[in-house]
Length: 458
Image 1 (spheres, rainbow, N blue to C red):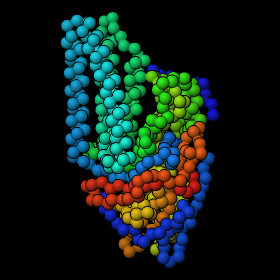
Image 2 (tube, rainbow, N blue to C red; image 1 turned 120 degrees about the horizontal axis):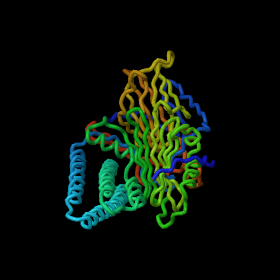
Image 3 (cartoon, rainbow, N blue to C red; image 1 turned 45 degrees about the vertical axis):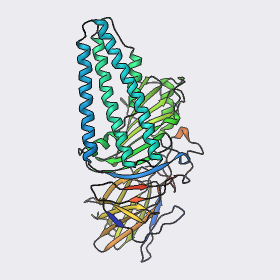
Image 4 (spheres, rainbow, N blue to C red; image 1 turned 180 degrees about the vertical axis):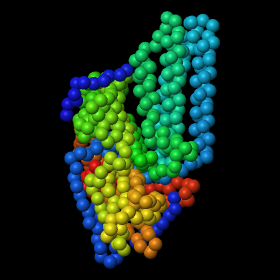
């Protein structure tokens, strides 16, 4: 699909699973002893919302983990923020106190060089964190906190970059290439994302606890979370970059995004729907559309989307593939989605259809253990992120219970990058499926393998 030429260019508590045994073929069934078997309704959609993710053949680890406020990291983030503000203030004060223009100019260049060096260090820190997680040297919680710390430092460095840009304009007979400043901004963008930022908010107690999905390859990471009525995801694929080439124009970058995300592009807003910023060795394409916002980064060397973030209101997400279990007057509905996608669980009276408030647990079929998600509330609904392997959902109300075992749907990979490897849904995760269920003041981790089942739009 070609893009239109009009472009704006701008520089927990553990609960046992009730003896659930899931099918091996990826189908869905409820474990009702009275013989009532779930009815699965599949509604293939021609409006799939595509995502940047990791091919199953390259997937190393996949986990779903609950995060809570944590005093240690919270203090670290506070110190990082305060330290960054102090360093930025001190840098600007030194520059403004320079006795002559030559010294002032040299101090500005020195500060800019130091930010560029820190950006290189952050790249190494991110790569090292992913490698240590893949080697099982750190937990998923440790990885997420480290990525959140890198995010926080990158944002602080960008604030310093902006301060340097502003003070440069006040320096006589001196300028810094706008391309250099923009390229540095784009490099720092590599280390930030909405999920990482929300992780900081959770750990520091500014937001409620949440379940985060973490998926990694050797050099890539995909994060997702449901929070504040929205599904939020971000992905980074270092293997799709080639910094030694710069052959893709901003017009071509928009065409690439239009092809990779056809549903999003076709439903973009009529006004201010598309924004392209080209800097350094990549192009940032932001699309505001009917059901959310997409930010995609196209590498100027490979012509591939190597990073994305998406935000989608939960109210805009419709069921494409629904599994239902009925027992004891309760109807349990699971709107299946892809690994890490937005998973809706609903509970209603089977006869009247009225919503039911009850506790909900979820766990991997392979582990036969479950973790408490919460309760469905007055609307009978609870949202979370989907595991990457067959899983069991259990709801309990009084002496009644419904247990439903199902599987995630295949990943809706970018339309323009669909290859045999990227559409392979065979399990390839090297870690052993495990789940630890701890108190609500700690972290529970689920390690999962690749997806199975029919496609759906998350």
